[in-house]
Image (cartoon, rainbow, N blue to C red):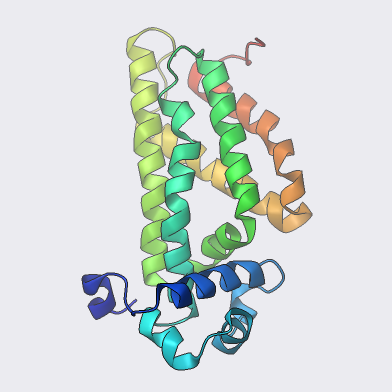
Length: 209
């Protein structure tokens, strides 16, 4: 996205045009990889003109950035149980958070795969993607520190390094699952990821409730 666009916020005077482009692009990603997706295809699917498109977006990559910005709030809400477990046990909180995250990935799998594969060549997408992972890392590290201080979790590797390793492992597992088998298979990653997180943080197998 250009510096001008980033500074001025959402552009254009046609919110329906912007919404149509966002919907069309996310739908197209279900069958067309980002690298093969053209602005012309988006225009045709959205039913908007080129001039209207560029009133709101700098490029097809800018559309992905804006879509990801909208979905990131859903991702954040999905993983909230991992950190704010309330009356849940640590094991239950991790499972609920993973199940919610997997459900969110399932709803937006083509977009999230496009973001995961597009960030190496799109600077703003890279910044957003790494920011999402960094936020998750900091929150999980805080849980690890809290539970170690309470004697719930044993001492071990640096909490932030451990949290970062786990966060990126979860991201890779879901990405690979979608790429290999499709989003319908995502629920199958919950159990192995749950065992991984409980084992890495608490040094034991999950306790069945």
